[in-house]
Amino acid sequence: MYTNRNNNIEEIDYEIIPFGEKVLKKESKKYFSGVLKCNLKTITPIFIGGKKNIRKVKFNNKNVDHNESYFPENIKEYIIPSSSLKGMVRGMLDMLTDSVVVESEIRKQEMEYKGKPYSFIDSKFYPTNDNKNLSIGESIFGAIANSEVNIEKGESFQNIQGKVYFTDGRISKSKAKISKEILLKPLDAPKVRKVLNKEKTKLLGRKYYKHRLNKKVDDFRDKNYNGSYNNFANARNTTLKLMEKDNVFQFDVYFKNLAYHEMCILMYSLELEDKMYHKIGRGKALGMGSCKIEIEKIKVEKEDKKYFSFEQKEIYKFLKKEDFMKNAKIYLELPKRENIEKLRKILKG
Image (cartoon, rainbow, N blue to C red; front, side):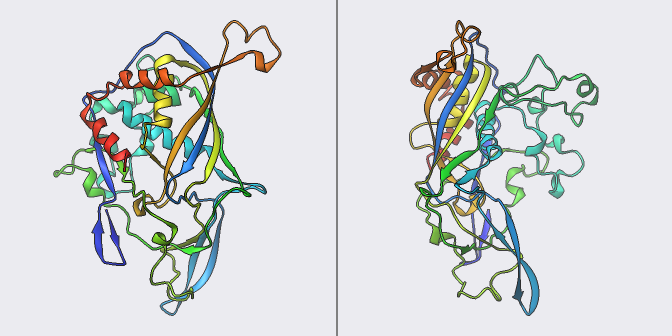
């Protein structure tokens, strides 16, 4: 929820996806190593924070610092950092599998959470701290000992390295469509009250921002801005350039020893279904960040070739994604799980 300063009303910008009845656990015996060749298409304008600049401006007759922020780039390309892609996909996979709630997902700065943040979560969603009983999210993306949940087990827990590696998403500057500078309209922070029960004792679930698929660059401008920074640009709003809709970034996901069910669920978490979209970057509450991922190619190592050939092209084979996506729905127990059915509706915008 945020306050729209143009009409002074509160708007609901996210939904809470309730926790499921249990952490989803699956098994399979076949393993894969290789790479997924992917693209990400922007459905609404997006912005990823990169280099910043501070500009001195006048606001209410005072000198204040105003932030100018730039999309990450190099000489030839605009870039979505691998950490942004990985975080987005892990967040989706954790929701789909009801995986454990990691410490970084808890907003400790909120007054309600200070002291004992894990006391707000059912113990079955605590980080595992058990090398033989990992959630699907921990198994794929890795896990570290969490002493805040259980110090004794945390001391004996062996940190688990993730099985996946994301490259940066890249688009050539010659192909990219990026807006002119805009002064982003300000908004208030989301209200934390909505994610807790009435007694403020338990988290109700995980937050996911709604899609607003008809949003354009002009929708994010401060409508009161008259072309002069004085008395409009201030410490609470930002000047930036938005990556417009219909830009296509290329990235890869490398994976090592993924079990078959992990491969299926990872691929579903990336591509989702027809007319289902991810959210990435800043301004999600305003309607920025909607995007669609497509898996273009699946290359996996040939077990009987990888130790005998020095020609890289000979150790890989290409697979089709249809069976993986079909079996992902079986592993995810769709459409039986009510909380995930709510998520799927929200993902369609």
